[in-house]
Image (cartoon, rainbow, N blue to C red):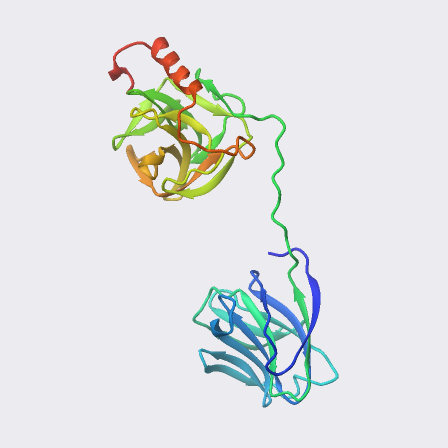
Length: 328
């Protein structure tokens, strides 16, 4: 949706080079005047003359309508709608499966018709059979630059041991009937990220197809982080390392997935090519997911285990010394 627009004026002659404009709002407002011919507006899903499957013609032998895949699918009588000395202003929309044209400011439509293609976003303007040029005024969407992320002052991520209360600044990782938070816990030689469910005062991690309940864990706090879409083993630069696997100490990251209307945080081990999470007392996985990233951290991204995590796991083993079956 565009908040502001700017106007552009163009002239078209027969066989002129066609220029395409991108309209993601699925609508365009334009004015046109000319004589001895008719105006054409082409709609396409990609730039290129041969990608134009829909043509809106205005005042072709006194008629206005739509040509779809070289067949006229709708036309209506509109004598005098195109004049040499007067601009006429139109509004063309193609929401959903309908294309509609109206005179700007008038409630009555010139035509409305179902169309087969829905992903139309490129528009071109030209004229046919006219002796002189057609003149157009286009209300175009402005160029919007991609916003630049600025470093957040403070809010760096840190882990807090769970003591029965949700710590201040805990990172919300998802939603499943209530907000879910990001936790990590030791398990069979690993340090594994998962989800914390406040109403149960417990954390849950996925392991070998099952959901493992945890009562001793840490919760991630801070706010200098963003979720980045990714897939399989693609780990973006700056992804937050949250633990390590029980095999070869591979770094694990924090991911989250959409599941039946819920958003569930889980673990990402790059060699597993997916985000693993717990849902309905089982472990599941998705190949397409979001991963937690520190946008202004070191631009390099590796899958090697950082020393602090090894030290942290040694701390866990020493503090909660027992056999491996303790880590349920």
